[in-house]
Length: 370
Image (cartoon, rainbow, N blue to C red; front, side):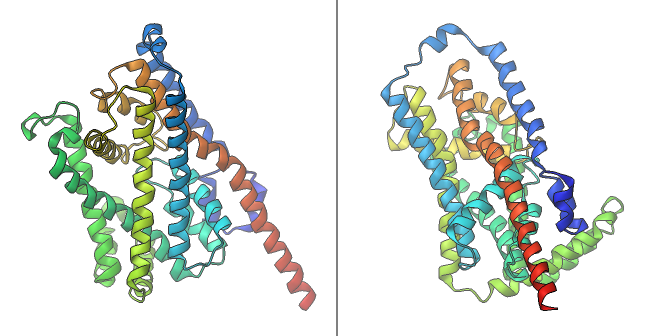
């Protein structure tokens, strides 16, 4: 992303867009592939690789997993269209989701692409109330799905969904502590934003701004005030919506996240002799959702490297070959991570060029009228 292309944006917008410049794909790719090659060096065995049956069964399930990737992207685009109440065309929604996913891929997983989404949506002439509502409510919907579904899965599958061979809470270890800590953080985070959006945004603003009195948070005061104002604006917008708006937003969110995990179910079926019965696949799905909760707090861009390491250990009772686990993990990351990095390299510069062209045409029209 060339610097002169950003001149069409103000200083704050430039700072945000620079954080997702396409040159930033280099670091996550190096981290991810570096970890993969290291694990291959440590775990790859020709004998295990030779056991893989590259059959029609394998091809079909890999294609099914890719189809689920497409469904997931369409589900996110559907949510965008629902939450903006049809302000964007379907084509525009698909394009904006690519930008949103790219921004998440080049940012630490724990940070995400919300700041970029705010800037991008603002350039698309979306009203401020809708922009704020979309970004904040999307985060709440994602959190509601996680904190709501995980306890239900726990009721059915117990502690075995947390890690292999964990038969009771007495077997709790570091990964389990990480999972419970991450889940509690997500629950608190979701509860605060839900309360702020639907019950009392003024109180949440006072709490957020008040927290900036703490020494190391003082420099965040301005952003805290903006977040509080955004929440008040979004709350007013959301309280006017019908139940169908909220139901559509949640169903599209649930579809997108479910496809994210079922995609990996299909890849494991493709390469491992595993039962496809409902109980086995549901248990596997529960383990994958647990794994993602831990991945969500990865310090690396898009979980690069961290996801590949986590995969093998988390699913060792389903994929007991290190070589096969690496192959599955690599295809999984190509579909759900590297693909978005590569598409983003094309989509983001093209989006910025279109925004600049539109502004140029508006300036010419303004000059002609004056």
